Image (cartoon, rainbow, N blue to C red):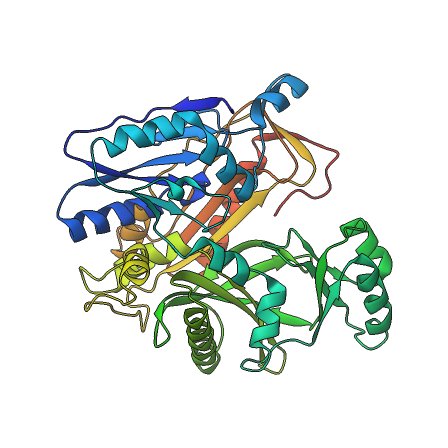
Amino acid sequence: MSDILFSNFQLEEDTEYFLYIGELKNYGLNTYLKEALSHIFSRKFDFIAIVPDVFEQYDYENLIVINPHAKTLECQYGTHVSCRVSSEEFAAVVSKDRRIHSLIKRLLNRQEHIYIYMYESIPEMTLDEIPSISILGPDKNIAKQLNSKIYQYQHLKDILPVVDFRICHGFDSLIQTTQELSKSWRNGLFVCREYSAAGVNSIVARGIDDIKDKFNALDEPYLISRFIPHEHDPTVLAVVAGEEDVYIAGVADQRIEQGTRFTGSVFPSVLDKKIIERLHEYTRIIGGWLAREGYRGIFGCDFLVDDNDEIFFIEINARKQGTTLEFCCTLEQSLPSGSPMLPELEFYAVTEGLFPANTVEMKSNPKDLHWGTYNYKIHGTAQTDGYIPQSTQERQAFKKVAEGKLKKDFLILEHTGCDFILADGAFIARIVALGHHRSDVQQGLNQGRKTIDLTIIKKLDSEDSNE
């Protein structure tokens, strides 16, 4: 049983609660969901967030922090350590924690049902096996299958423009196939494990040595695709309620560094209107396929656009995207008052298989909102000697910029704190920049990175740490 590192939740009378289980970066989505549930059920809802993020301080309400590695690493380094936990391990640990089970019993004595809200539905979450508990999101076993890159390419190759690819069943097959393809795919090969996100389990390889260094002879399935030189990596956020009911939230431009490392997104996309329309069309085709597979809820699609304006499918994320909160904030300022936001659309998609009657897609950008995100990730190990006060006002910042009360703004979110060791792969902070021009956004992101840099005293056994 892992230690509870922090807890400040308080239950209020005449209030029903749902549980959010996942990283703190998605905390803000829950405010939209609690408002939707309060409206749908005509009673007050709130949430308790169970997160793995180890920070110096927490300016968040109703929080429980559980991290199975924090105490061990603290003993190893002699100080506080921030480290990431895989969503699978975290879900499994939370599912078995007796104090979480005790909280659930306490809540079920007050209310008839408990929803669990997650960034991604995964089989390792088993709390929904308890009577009167359900995951408010896609079916976890269907989502697991659909997140397989191999499954995606096998089923979409005949209905979408997909990059040339091969499937390798094992490391030896990967090496042999690489030797064969590298002669004809001279721009490189994109190689990834079956389950991959944000570039963690993937590489643009120029030869066998690159692959051996990255995958260390792991004997499992791999997907190899032809690397196409390109400038644009658009991502589309959507919700599917049925085969003919696919809601497009918007298109953003991803920032991909070193070929595979996702570091953030920028909205609106710089792509031509006709390309945006084709991206919408392809995403609706994908949404229809997902619906036929039994998937309901929020999903994202990544594409590339080559130098000839040809679009190629890259992957589906059968889960929420990193831009989900920013798109909620954008839709709130752009759509008619009372229009359902993404968590409400997902609720209806999952529970009813349809969208509410007042659903409206964003056809333009009436407030001329521009925004960008940057995930500052550590590669290697680093140490902090400063802190940045936590901002929880992202939604309010969007409102102020949309209404013209601010010309531009940037926020540094979820900064770890002072005197911390940052383990390899940990995030020290996240930046969101806003304005009415892309230059405003870039200026804010640059200033945010410089500010975060000042809190890092040294980088230990690290290459360039910025991601």
